[in-house]
Image 1 (cartoon, one colour):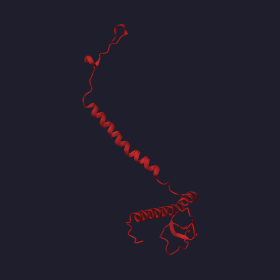
Image 2 (spheres, rainbow, N blue to C red):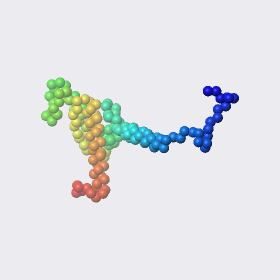
Image 3 (tube, rainbow, N blue to C red):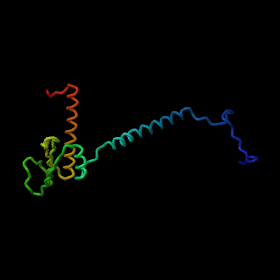
Image 4 (cartoon, rainbow, N blue to C red):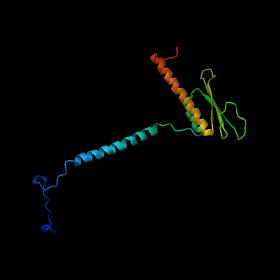
Length: 159
């Protein structure tokens, strides 16, 4: 279709010349936007929580750094590797693979005496180191709970 003079005249909405959207289109658009927002909320929560998660300790350098923060007064660890068929202590857990024993101690700053002494067993050195760190983090959490209960006066321990 050719327009004389190359000018195309469009009708204005005031003159009633445009197609009006059906009344349910804004509602449909709002529902789509709401659905997209609902889809983005779990993703945002996951991304935020992922940054808060503690990275696992897998090597000696990671253990040194984390335990140095968790035990500022000092700590010591001793790793024993048991080979196939080697005699293990009576308190060792049953295992189909050779075990790693990690004994760790936490020291008191003033006297240098051992405050905590623990032993963990694992199938690998990395897992033993991770268990040691988790064990210390658990101790700290329990200490914080006891301290908060003592401050509130709700401590079940009669101190």
